[in-house]
Image (cartoon, helix red, strand yellow):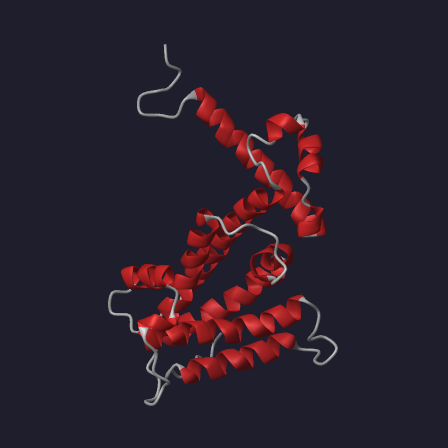
Length: 233
């Protein structure tokens, strides 16, 4: 007799899903405490009391495990940003809320942030991690799509972008133009640059108030989008 419920997962599938979640939780603890270099399959298996041979049936490489952590982190960051935008009333407030939430999450999760965005990040480019990354990108596309920028922006065509990302973005925003998609990537660069410098400790020697610098950049970014920066943020 099958141990699967009516339309539900089998006992074996439930056990596998639970064990996978426990592995990722243990790996995340190692990541938070010591960075990506601290995530080692044998060490995690040892902490969980699992035989290495059994552990490798869940994640056969370190890169695969890090990719799973990256996918979770992309989605957590995307959800955090989405919540911030949904709590704002106007396009200007949404742009600023998105930017402030981006910095807030990064400062609260520096090792996850490095895992996602460090050029030396060792996680694999799995389909799940890529789709989760695109989910994150759609948030900044949403901000850019509400812009009223001045005339004369540099022209772009769809050939300037990766086809799969273009497909995802246009599916989410059917009226999207290539110029708007380019604008979203420029916005991301402006937000990401200062946050990365702060996370890596490169701003503190130059300025005692990196938050003020970041907020000024958000106001300038909001003006570039054609909005009046909100005064109560």
